[in-house]
Image (tube, rainbow, N blue to C red; front, side, top):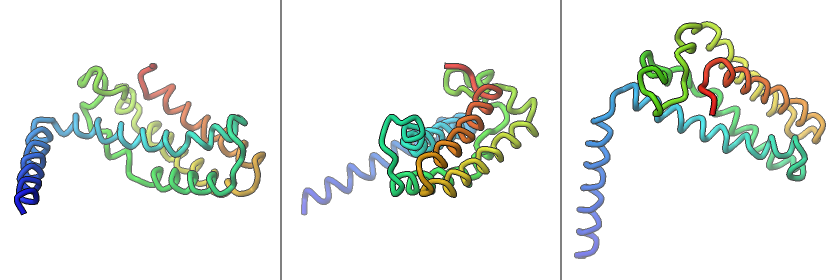
Length: 156
């Protein structure tokens, strides 16, 4: 019983500390963290698809379908909502790689994000059709990602 009480107490302390730390961040910093998390998940799901497309790993229809469906689900999330004004490299420095051009050319940014969604759905449609169809769809997805990174993301 004593161990359960101690565990509950430590859990409560951890939760309070987490809330206190989060409360110290601005909405822009929190949004930058969230969009980085979203991008990390996108890379996690897209990685094996790109590896299959390049021939680095064997084509696996089941894995391709699962990864493509997850990627498409992530693309449907309103990721644009995480790009709050004043959350670019100009304001947040190294905390983000989002360039001010996102807000300077907002319509173009939203078009690029919509293209990402469209290409992610196309990968779902091709995932189980064989390596050639997957490769073609993943190439278009890569172009879509590259377009956004080229125009709206600080280079590595």
